[in-house]
Length: 192
Image (cartoon, rainbow, N blue to C red; front, side, top):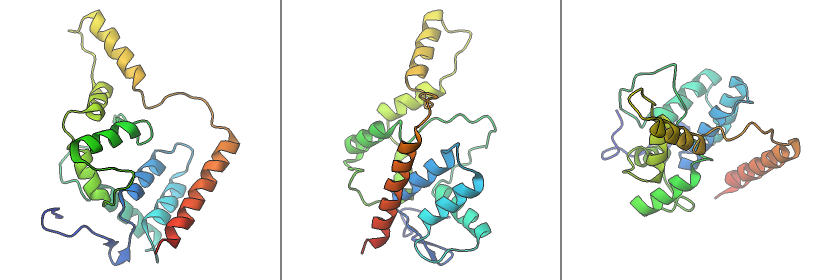
């Protein structure tokens, strides 16, 4: 079992070098939330981000990605089929950014940090804007609540909903986004 206080953060999986930066973990998480990609595409794109050189076989890539995304977490949280998305790195970006600045003094725009360190800090944030919104998204309406409370919760849930709108992203915007990602990857690979 990995221990952040005793062990160096991993920069390889089974001997294969990885890009362990927290931004890589965020991008991989975003890939797996993409409703327009097939599972095989998701794992392929995630592997391209995670591995910095030679890659393991595809079935091992799946294991490596799962390890990278969850290896930091040692809690025994039961898996539920009715999981509701409670956070989104795009929708919640400013809450996460400002809360890291406020609570930890970390500027996520310039920070160098392992994904596991980032997740450890993110999931243990004290009461703040980010945790407040998570609480609203997960709040259950009960029969004991007054109508005013139910209306207020519904309004807050709508305000902080992850699925903002069903509007389609124009193809030219998608192409520009893909070009920007490719440029980022080229710059990242050229980094000394």
